[in-house]
Length: 237
Length: 99
Image (cartoon, rainbow over all chains, first blue to last red; front, side):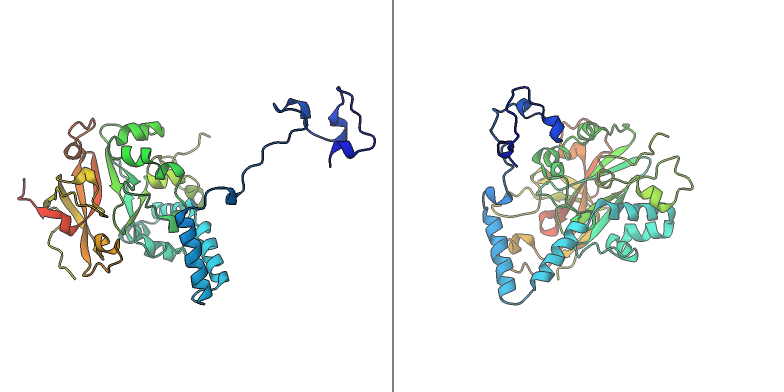
């Protein structure tokens, strides 16, 4: 509601809005009084790209021909959006407490995920295991391949040219920029996803987690640990 | 199906080819020497599929390990640092051991 419609509105310059329960001062926003905040653009206000048109056209055709239903399309999108690094963290935590599961995870991530009721999708995923003398990190230099059906959407920096071009060229300075300084005795092994294979990093279990249950362990394994630009860390007590 | 022609541990070289169009062999590996890690799979050839063709018979894909110092002669880092890349078999040629 506009203040000007209030019959008892007081136009005194020192008028205090606080008494009406407004939590802010209209005169201190850096734009002239009476002018509204610029709106955040709606999604439709961006350019309608060729690929957006293609996506819409294919979806419309699939629906019009009855090959899929609108509900199936919606459920699939919902399912894709429901994936998150927490699923990868569950796999890592189980591997840390169960050596037989770890062996199965290293052999076939998708099958190991299915054991925990996680659908990791049809594209095979390989786990690369960090060890005391060996650190692994993943990238896709050609585009932005990522195990998204397990871990959800990739972070923007993973898709950026800077990360993709630099991490295969100078991984140690890149990792240092992420705050991960590695000793020269630790080999850095970069995995470039160029074929129909995706990767996740199986990090080392941090010291000081002896006796922890899987849920507590999983909380240490973040998205960046699964990409290999960070290591799981026990929070300071 | 094409029978895989390499074995894990075998030294290989990526062909120094620069064809136009779609391929999955990163530029930084072209002409570089590496070692076969393992067979990923056999996959329809993406260089054919990119143009709407089926890409059959499927092509073996190998994970190849490259030393960073081989890829980047000015690499500043330990000799054990490596990059592992999936390479489609037609891009690979065998090297003599120690080659």
